[in-house]
Image (cartoon, rainbow, N blue to C red; front, side):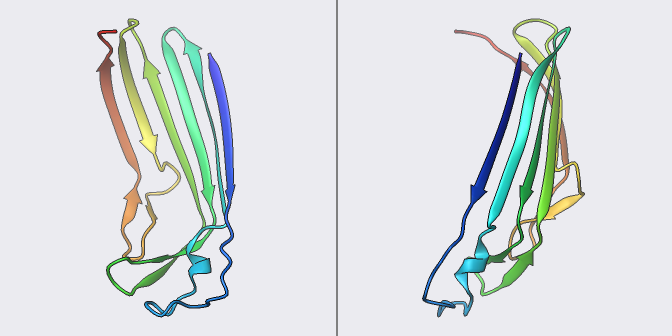
Length: 128
């Protein structure tokens, strides 16, 4: 019927080396210190089910693995949701949305962004 989950990650990098020779950067700033995800799913009745995820990530500095570029990535929130309907036990129709809070979310040093996405589909379970 229902499930809830939450996870939290705290990561603090400590080093006495200071900036690295290759990029002249401080590796301690390259990892978000706090990451949190909270979500759940539930059967809604009449074959409907829904799920949602809300996430948070602290600001960090991304470093390119192919160029000596660095970009400050601001703190971000994420919201994903999915609604499905099973007209029969083996069939499911669904719609889902990812990154619904913003049109895109930059995650890398070269500016590559994860866009808001919508998708839908049909699945059919068979066999075992």
